[in-house]
Image (cartoon, rainbow, N blue to C red; front, top):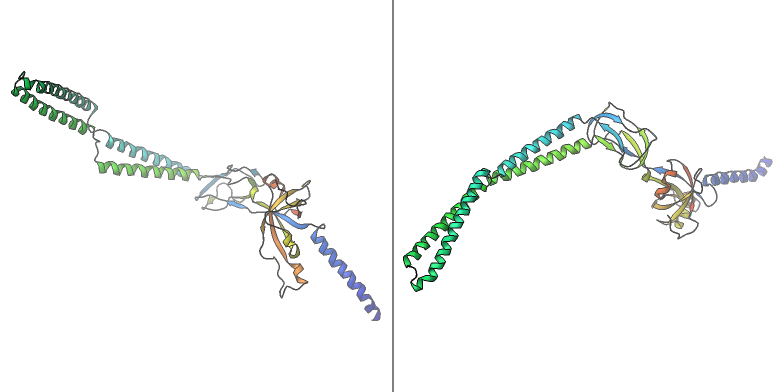
Length: 333
């Protein structure tokens, strides 16, 4: 029993060394924080219900933004577009018919010629009257002549006005104003229906919203899909980020927007990332109080975003070592 008591301090020291070793192995090299790559998937599906015709990508494939991912059967939508175009053409033809002049072209030409003749007569009579009125004080013409010319001018003006009114009548649209206004609304409605049909047809081909890697394809050609059902699980490159945890004692050394250095297996010389998120609360909270010993268990979630040129180096779940940027204040690329 006495020998056991003598060995107790030695056993306690061995246990402390073991705990310290485990803790240091979890923390990585001195001055580093452990982290890993993380990304937010985008689950791409159709806007409309329909049958899946074919999938254009495979699992693990890199795709560009706007690249086609899959296509649905658009037979019904193509027919709807043709019908909408025919309805629009008919509505526009009806509007043109209502807006065209009421008279035939030859009637309008004849009315124009008649108006020109009436205008010439009126101008000739007005010129004769103006001359004779200047001669009247010298008795070179009689007053009866002047009075007759005045009457002829009034008649010529009336006849010219009648020709103007007749020509305007022939040029007036065939339809009544309320008919034309209603038909213009019908044309606008037909255009909207065509735009809706074309939009629905365009939705049958679904493209990648961003460049990234196809994580999985969860639907196959021939399946009937509901609107919003996932077909392609896509991980956009821009959604990748570095996630690491910092002890509470070291949290004050980090600032939003500052740079951190990232290294990993196969990353070469590594790269830099800019801190884009610092958790306001710790990931682990002791059950009772923040004693001096338990405060060391508090860690805070930190996220950092690398520049676009280094995003392809990251793979979700990949272990990373994170350390402060060596030269504080130096702008990151």
